[in-house]
Length: 520
Image (cartoon, rainbow, N blue to C red; front, side):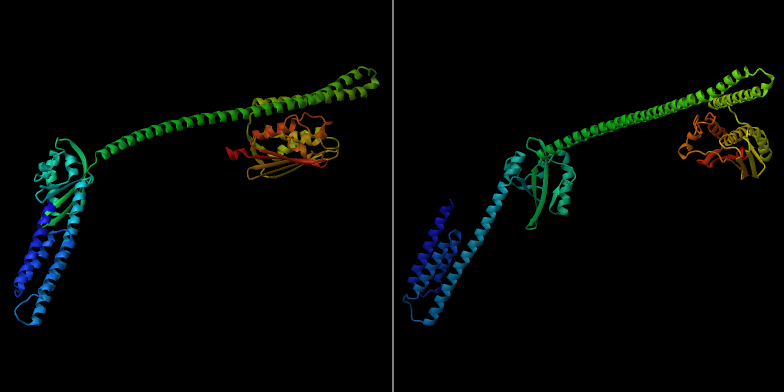
């Protein structure tokens, strides 16, 4: 149909051009007849082809120039030329104007076609409404989305596409948008739903835009069905909840596992500690057994020597006494009797040491504190020990500080007698024994120094153990219990004992005893 209209316009322009040319030939003096050429050129604006406009324009110019040679009444040649020039300019400008208008029209038509193609082929639903909320235009995607025909929507209120429960709120939103228009996305922070022709609801995402034309307000709504997105979000949310549930279960299991591991670790730790204690106890028991075996060995060795020697002496002396029957053999009998008495006394001393050690081991030795006059006490000890000294030996006593001290007098006596007895036993004849006492600041320093055989350095740290004797004292009678018993007595009255010795130069044993009255 468009081609038919174009042919009609072309035919009419051709007829108009021919008629104008004929009239110009018949009436060459009438100047306004060129208007037919102008009209014919203007009518080509309805023809798409610019070449037809150029053709009619050039033909019109040629006919105007040709009309200058037509016979006419005598007149001014200059006026004729001006007239022809003016006519040519008018026709030329008309041709240019028509071509320009056709280009503008063609550009607008292309734009309209592009807009129409965009509108018709858009995958999003597009709905155009006026300021009354009536649907003015709708694209095919929107029709397919809502299930309507175009005629069923045009002129209808936009609320027909919205679920009824949202009508009241949507009217308020629409009025607010008209008052403060702007490009925006609807539904931020809330879910939007649309309704199809069948009444089925589905979630949508809506973007709004607007424009004004001839003082009338129009709103463009871009509508996207987000059902799949919502389903994906719902599945994602369910997966997230499942993941959180699994994570919580894993966290609980981890916590239980950690508790069990910690519990097992504590059990293992306790077992290891118990094992360590058992090992320590076993080690201590082994050490104790080893020590007991060593003590037993030393005891057997000592007992076999210390008991056998005096017993042998007693037997031999008793046998010899029986042989001295004459009265002049009394000196020999007395000598053997003395040997018997000394051997019996030695055996008695051995038994006393064993009994003292037994009482200490059984905890039967109790302390009884009381005031002791040091000077008087030391003088009594010296008188008592004189009978045990070797020929030429003497005890030198020095005492300084307070005369009185509160301690256990019996234990202090046993300590001093044992230390002085050792000093006399391991010192040669004619050597002095120095006993020094210093009682100051509630602390008694008591030392016994001799010039005897001394103690080897490697034996000194064993001297306070039971049944131990220095290697250089094997030929001297003794049980190896003296210093051990002394140390046990010193411990009972909360004191300390130490010794210093050099082999062949003598030994000094020092005892520190606190004044027990200061601790009561």
